[in-house]
Length: 77
Image (cartoon, rainbow, N blue to C red; front, side):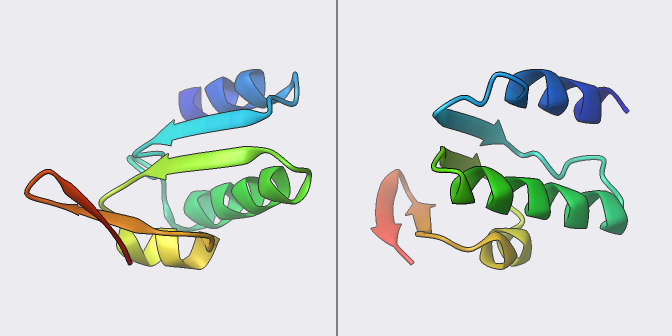
């Protein structure tokens, strides 16, 4: 519940940049699905969404441009 409240509080002002660090930590399947919809909605309204995660299936479901980091180097996925 704390994650949901924090996310709602962060998005209420419709920021132009949304930074998410491991947002699926502690979420069940339904919570992760709801979060992916929120992320897609934010991107659709024009916000830039930066997502840092180890959960690659989640990142792929959310879509967008994906980079991976290997030994300190970024590469386009």
